[in-house]
Image (tube, rainbow, N blue to C red):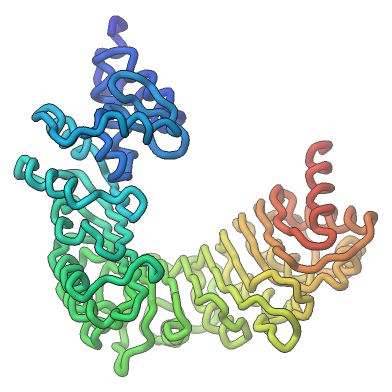
Length: 497
């Protein structure tokens, strides 16, 4: 390291961080050019590494690993492409490891910030036992901030989970696949004990438990909730909670993200979720929470007529709302949604319908206009499910309303009727529809399998109409009928503009 620039630690780390962010292979090459570069570069690379499988490769001779998306690894000083990893490491497997091997393993583990543990490449019981026996006594992952654990039947991680606990742990997600996971009762009890022992400072816990014995975890998760105070910021579980746990959850002062699976309790306080910003309703049973919040006089919602400015109590204003899949969208549902004036993301999807009798998208252009007028801050809107049925009552006029009232919108998915789309676009050009200067920043429009059958000349009319109301539109996702031709003409128009 001859240049004095690299002798300044802060400048060296700025260079390394830039290399890691823009091209990890470049960072690996940089690390190999000089011994002085190796340690700081490795620490930056391993901060981005999340795979326990890759960490275990350190015990097989790996000294520098990037990730599993086609980037390089360094084994024994030699550089290999990712598709040679398994072969090369199979040649390096050893049963006995030196003190230097374990020191390197612990050093790399100390740099990691996140850990992804799952059936693919999961650690064996023998590996976990060796790690447990050779740990130095302190936390193996002292800087670990989050864990995503995909548990499965006979998962060896369960009895060794304390290996992964860190004083800085902030987020834990425990997921189970009903196809792969049928944990015996003894392992479920052990899993309940793990949840009970999670650090009191944990900020986010999400348990995606999807098998027949959810109630076996109910006491442990309910107890976890009742013991948490201001530190808990995100929570979600399929496990039915006790009434006391639900009440405590609604009163937490800093809970900003909630994934709801369970329906309403028998008694609800008058002041709930004071800081909720992100709400995902994952089941039909949880949908009544939306209507309750919308009608609550002293909850996070404003009363009275719509305001043109943001509310001053921004900490108590919902910004993200995701409703259950296959929701029926009607004026009753929208009357609750419009109460959340500061929404930035709104996702409400209907079931895929095959005709008028099965269509659950029961709103019209006026309903869409009222919705977007009430929610001017939307950045991402998913309304309905674009399908092969052309029976809904929303038309191109809904797109015009969205373009006029949601200037910050960048992504849109909406179900609308295209039977008269050419006429509707022509009305726009002839001044027969409401028209104003196009300000919407929409770049991505998803129309899915909405039917569209028009002649070649009419596709140009549709392109002009879309570009008139959405001048920044670059990505149109549609794959039925004439939509591919519309997309092609849009690309040609962009090429020659």
